Image (cartoon, rainbow, N blue to C red; front, side, top):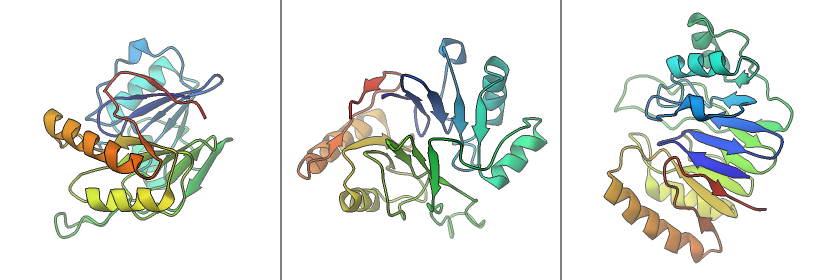
Amino acid sequence: MKITKFVHSCLLVETENRTALFDPGMYSPLDIETLKALDDIFITHEHPDHMDVDRIKQLRARFPGARITAPASAQMLLDQAGITGVQTSAPDGVCFFDAPHEAIRPLGMVDPPEEVGIHYLDLLTDPGDSHHFHETMPILALPLTGPWASTVLAVRVALELKPKYIVPVHDWQWRDDARQQMYDRLETRFAEEGITFIKMTDGKPVQISL
């Protein structure tokens, strides 16, 4: 499996027979013309840092056959924007699981959106903006920081679930030097538990063999 991170929470996941893009949001610059194939677009929830409507329109134009899967509330917003045919049920090779978006109150006076956690090909887990989930595949896309997030809680859930690999996501808010410092610290801590923390560089693919 080859994984490329495009800032924040956007991951391009490539296997021999399938290519999927997770959470293409507004903080994730993505040169769509460089993509050679795209079978699936997965949206965990409707927040714009995970679902950039204009970018999804561009992706649909380049890959009209790509399947888009999203929660019902996100599907409604995409439909209103003219992006039709979005499905809410998990396609073959994918399983949804309970991963509620973390509370935003009192910072924001709105309730969290509908969100789905995604298990992909029994290999990778994307919990969206959640630290309250109870299962993972060998590769975990772990959200690290944000207005709703606690890095300490992220570490705790990862240590409890013990994936083989951790791919860091949801860290746009950190300065580059702060991010690298934290990546080093997380790499050391997780290695003590036999977990490989992958210090992703934006736009550079990483090959993971399982």
